Length: 379
Image (cartoon, rainbow, N blue to C red; front, side, top):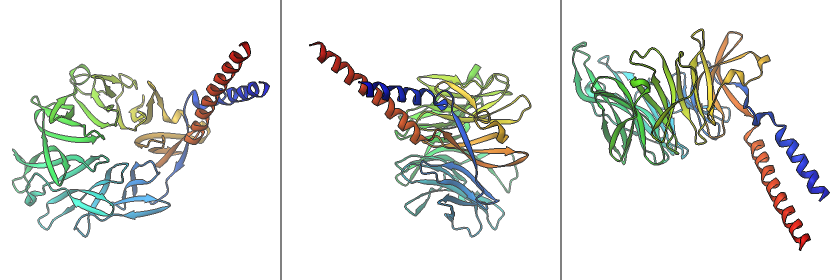
């Protein structure tokens, strides 16, 4: 019994002395992969996705791989969405002989790339952009339609863009909320889609699309809103204006039919940009001087990220981009007026959390064993 009590004491001291359980903290690693690299996504293996020298690319194991997905010899593009099953959704654009910019969306899996096509006429671009993909390889985004808009240069006509879902080699138009434009930003494992669409009053509103129907998620005080992502638990993130003027917009999470302000501050704009399967949300907001500051929201609490790193390092965490299921965060940061993309790693590392949880389990086991021992002694 003395051994059990000693073990319990050691575990209790080790667990409750861990400051990271009270408030998360992070180490900062600069990503010096290339001067013209722009990494915007990170998967659970730590692979970075985005662009290198303005070309579609990913970075893993210290090496950058350029993925040329279009037929253009000189495209500009990037990877915009990934799945845990290895799907990469991307886009590339280029200027044709007639000075028309053509943008196309692509899906790549196991080294095979598919052109998603477009709703609109190829003679005028027929632009398609990708914004989300799930483990089934279903892609969502926005694509130009055949609906020509009034005004503009007659040689460069404009067309309405609609949200789409692409699966089984077919692109489906999701429509709008009564307005002209829409765009899908995310899709989860169940096939639930979120995005932004104009209503009949030409106001942008966050939407959810499921069972063949697009539904307006509303907004704070009736203001405009947009949805930027959804996880497999159905939690939706985005941004909504505090009033009809739209001067101040607040980051939100939408769950169980309710839109909750993440709490950055009612007088300063903020936006939620990514959510992982643990429900951790990252975003950024304006400080008192109008400068961007990154944040993480978890367990109902919002934390400014540059307050969660060593203050002696003088890091200012600015725009956030992506968070994986291990809690690694991809963001832009500045130190002594030198800025670049960084990786924020939680402290303790996930392995340490696992050890702490194992310790809690052992506590329970020891307590149960002691209870049985005492009960047997009384018989």
